[in-house]
Image 1 (cartoon, protein in one colour):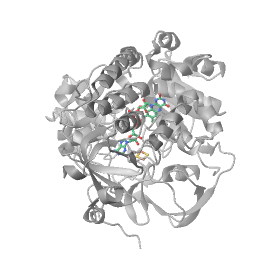
Image 2: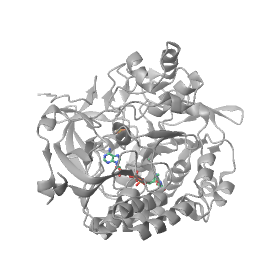
Image 3: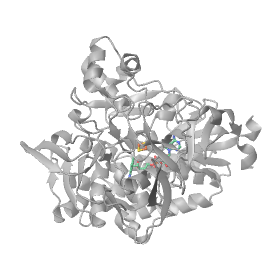
Length: 457
Length: 109
Ligand SMILES: Cc1cc2nc3c(=O)[nH]c(=O)nc-3n(C[C@H](O)[C@@H](O)[C@H](O)COP(=O)(O)OP(=O)(O)OC[C@H]3O[C@@H](n4cnc5c(N)ncnc54)[C@H](O)[C@@H]3O)c2cc1C
Ligand code: FES
């Protein structure tokens, strides 16, 4: 099989995946890159090659800077397979995917998982109502469809992405009704200024007027240290109520965007049964990796936010490091590792600054946690009282995590709720066992599966 | 974009395509994901849950939450935030059970 295998298969065409492809091609390796999006860029640079002048002005210089990376990637000679839904990856580095309804298989000598991050769940009363979305979803609609809120919108939670979106909306002429900030009243701007160059990506946006200053000047209502968040409405959202400064508030809006940071997307690494550790500083699971990004399975690497949250610059360096390592370029790897050390320096500060409050990770009994099977935090606590020790057992008790999202949306909350209720560390509670198919696939598609090398060569 | 929509377009000129939603013709923006197109046309919910029948709508727009599942041309379990909209698509709300395990073709003929 190895004579028809690709040197390096990369899953994910974000900063990490694109950079790995560029580095690998520079050393003459054959590369295939699969991504479920329609064009390269990942989350930060989503659809950067299609963005017009207006979009670029709204999204900012940081975003536009990704155009060069995406253009270089498109030219580098890697096979790029967009709109690819990956439904199975094997320890033998076989990648099974669907493109336009047809099932295909690729075989790699090495595999890089560069699937990035997704937003940490933020369960609260009413969060499943239509009209409630994530801030990331709001930004995706802006980047990929030039869509902005038509009426009053409330942004709630914490983390740089929330403030960035508020500023981007401002530049687009959108009236943000309120920014409901759950971070605990720290002087964010001051803290940002102490961060060394490593986080330039975010920091550039804060230079000049500064994100928060820009928001303040625009007169956006900014509630700090908010707690007890609750979305009101019957079959759609109509308001967010919360407590801030010792007072109860209620802000009317039919569109409410939630965010409390991002966490590694570990669905593929979990399905491969790779080792994962609980990160107490980032409050999430991180796949175990050695100094060059190789996982507990030989030949399978992870780079970027899918390994641990580090931001776009770290993602690019990690991608390059994996490719240089595979290509056996010792001098290159040493150089990249040095740069990585510098780029990662500010991370502990950022993690501390934007640590989500416990209350919004471990919600009250009446809050729905598993949206697919509609299991509440109280249900999960009851399972624990009946002897349930970890997420996998909640499946037997109440189908928690067995819906179509396979625990992507609830998994982290379930781990944290069980750990808190049992008074043990999350590492002892564990996570769901993830099994393929990772994406919906029909029997007919499965029956027609074929190797895609003939088409690629 | 529809007056009911929670969103409006920044684009100066918007190209539309025509699809079918719940058996009715619907004009939606072109060159966006199906979920974005449905949101733009003012649809507030695109699914009814299997458990309580609660109305649900796209939540993450990036393939994580599976709240955006719809039926497209008779096939269930399509993540509308990940498929580009296409003229002539026949789309229905997904009501009731959804499963990731091979489900076979769901026919609405
Ligand atoms: C919604 C969102 C918006 C963000 N916006 C910003 C921003 O504006 N500015 C900023 O500095 N940071 C932003 N971030 C943080 C982000 O994580 C960046 O730091 C950066 O994009 C990380 O790069 P990456 O290459 O590791 O992953 P990503 O850029 O996330 O790229 C991962 C790629 O993998 C693909 N993928 C994931 N899973 C699969 C799968 N199973 N099959 C196929 N393809 C898959 C995705 O489509 C994506 O293109 C955002 C994060 C999120 C979740
Ligand atoms: S909106 Fe979350 S998966 Fe499509």
